[in-house]
Image (cartoon, rainbow over the protein chains, first blue to last red):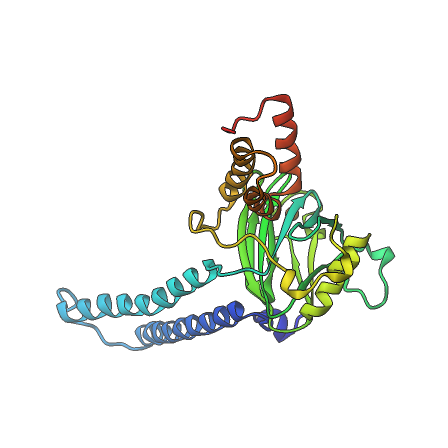
Length: 229
Length: 84
Ligand SMILES: [Cu+2]
């Protein structure tokens, strides 16, 4: 169903996504101003009957409409660059999670403690429980502690995939033979959904990503449980 | 293996730190270099030299398990391309 929420950005659940949302709104505001200004200009051109006798060689107006857009672009470029460098930063991650894209599922590895490996398949429609989200829920979620820095190492086993969680502001290609790194900090507990974002074959739409964010103490318990298995 | 599962505490959560040699998104080299460093370290300082274990922790945290298995097989066959 189409709602305002499907049109706008998802609610942010990480400091990075907060910044990205601010940047999006800031840029959109500038775009609206430009659109209204140019629209008004075009409209008046079409609707009046004036003829300009001295159309050529207007040095003053040429300077104004060259310099003003340049300044406007700076106001977009500077916060954009700032964000790029913030997104790249990784300080002292608490855990590293490896995610490997396959045709067509994701597999995850937690190897900081003991080796935990599992595959994460979408729940097919005929096996869905009433509380599941269609095409979004998976059988094994990635469990992650909140308010801790998580380093994700993303790669692929066959073709390029892309690992994405919109509400955390994370999207990175999973390329075979290469390890890509991103990191995030989740603000709160909850479930966060994403989908493969690089056309990777027939079932590209059916390899979602689900993060289950829990307290660090419960995460320790989860890790202990998983290592026992 | 000697890890008593219940004894795991929040302070035990440690992972490969940020390495200023690999400040980029591409961390492939961090994984590979740590793998090579581990076996080179063992070759030079002997199998029981404890500081080598650091590299092992790092490459286990960063490398996909499939890569490690592949390289292990290559080392056994003697076809590993790296300088160990
Ligand atoms: Cu994919």
